[in-house]
Amino acid sequence: MPGRTDGLHAAGRRSLVDETIEQLREQLGAGVWPVGERIPTEHELAERLQVGRNTVREAIRVLAHSGMLVSRQGEGTFVRSTTDPGAVLRGVQRSGVRDVLEVRAALEAEAARLAAVRHTAEDVARMRAALAREAEVMAAHPDRAGREATVEHDLEFHTAVVEAAHNPALAELYRYFGASVREAMRTAFGDHDMPEVSLETHEALVDAVESGDPDRAEAACRALLAGPTAAVEQLIAAIAARK
Image (cartoon, rainbow, N blue to C red; front, side, top):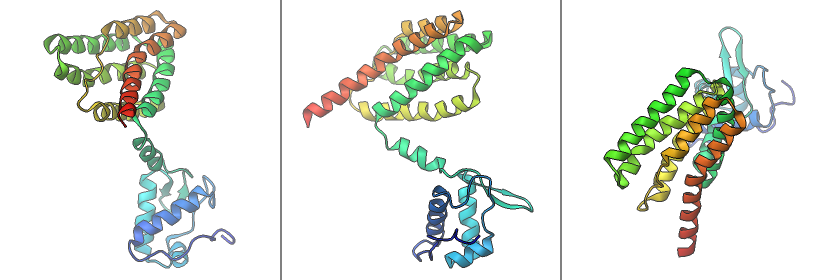
């Protein structure tokens, strides 16, 4: 492909595979090969990068696993995406707890709206069952240990709400953010108490979803998330004041 090899320079010797992955990722990100187009063969890339074909093959395997490339038997390797999803997720992991919580809130608010319209009786039953388990833990352990133990059940509840939207892409994205928020909040609070879970606001969200009113469901969702958000803001302010 004439004119499309600028920037494909010889890979360094410290880590040939890593260097090759990075160079191919840069070229994909720059749009050297558009989405849907076949990239050069392993032999061609090996010559341009001055590395072995096995190195190129491993680099392509990694980029295919990350979702940037896709190999088709007998046809070659094609561009699936010019953005590395792994890099995006690594960027999320480096974000602060407030940043991740805000994104999670946006996802949950939209999910609540969709759930109000698309939920099934089984979805509502799943939400109420998760709440019942959460209430049992809180009643048995009304201390800090209990609050930490409710985190898993709370995530189970919120996941049930999101999955009631019946949007697989939204559910998958939320699973990642849900886990990130859980770990980020545990790390951020450290020796401080985790914020208490309000069962009343959770129950109000279930009722709103069951009502079939998307505006009411979104409002109930935002009211529920106001507590954790306020707790994080207070913690951040307290930490800043000590610096």
